[in-house]
Length: 440
Ligand code: SAH
Ligand code: SF4
Ligand code: F3S
Image (cartoon, rainbow, N blue to C red):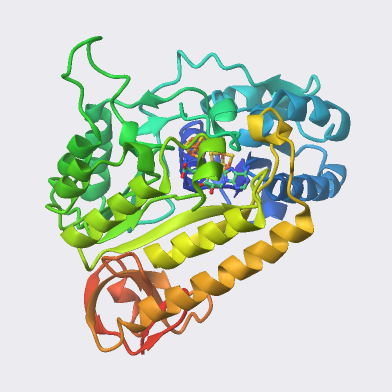
């Protein structure tokens, strides 16, 4: 029997889908690329913003037809969206064609539930948070031969006031350093040159490990150093870091690691101190600026990217202007920008002074215009430079060309044959756009 997995959401979810594929293959099922050919359809969901959930409701609505035409198909939904009790209750009413509903803790039990669903006794729901038996070592079928994604921690303890992740992924649990390293070694042996370390806040890695009151637990710097020491690993990335836990000492450690030091992603969220406080981020702009300055002192060649939310409750025009001014000061290489989306159950959703959608959209436009200008200027400084590109595969927009990334994580479109995939090649940059460089 064949399965098809559709994934929504972040890299963490992409990687969960690689694990789900591993678990299903181990149980004897085979992957397929076509929805219409699948006997089992798995939808791995996200709920970070309302727009994500709306897309997923649309997607599962379309699956009704498939179930109608082929009643034997098993449809399973899992992930962050279904972990919410309100959603699993709604699915009972509006999703009777969904056979299995699991959350973020029970995904590895999917094969067992598929067997039960085949016997057929109505929709099966398991969103229990009991994950004591959640195994650390699960099989995984990697979708990329170049970059291996490796979990270092699960869950999040930060409770940023706008964010639903701590509610759907639970408290932070660090994986043991041994488990992380053996997975990295395996990936390196299989040919991966780049490692992406995953955690909602990688900087607090290890705080829950070790003996209580003792200082013997590994920290994030230990993981980075150990990953870099694995033979064959040319680049190490991580996602995401939290400015509150990002110290100058960590920047100093990173600047000694050539595989890591040229790229930082440091989510700012807002450039207004009042808003940062209401977001419960635990830092202010002065502290953030000090980190950026220290990064630029240590590694002037490093690219720095960020995340920004516009229209957080109570954000005035002056507050938004403060964000624009701070962005102009920090001069990020790129910013991932989002309209604030109220998430039920989070403190911010209940705050007064929600910003009207029109105002949010207008602010997003102004922010994007400013950031695009800065991104382009930053990218133009690369023209004429020789960069080292780790080639990922054919370019999606133009399959005649290849796509890859510089050490500073900039996308480069280049010429060459498929034999260059998973190789690091030196190329001269000939053109610069807002979101990518060209070596043509
Ligand atoms: N743990 C990571 C990733 C969180 S989700 C981190 O802290 O960086 C990725 C991004 O989505 C966040 O950085 C934030 O900018 C955005 N985001 C989270 N909740 C949101 C919400 N309710 N509305 C709009 N954007 C949100
Ligand atoms: Fe959400 Fe904040 Fe945790 Fe990131 S650090 S997952 S934004 S609560
Ligand atoms: Fe990721 Fe979406 Fe869950 S962003 S952690 S899949 S809510």
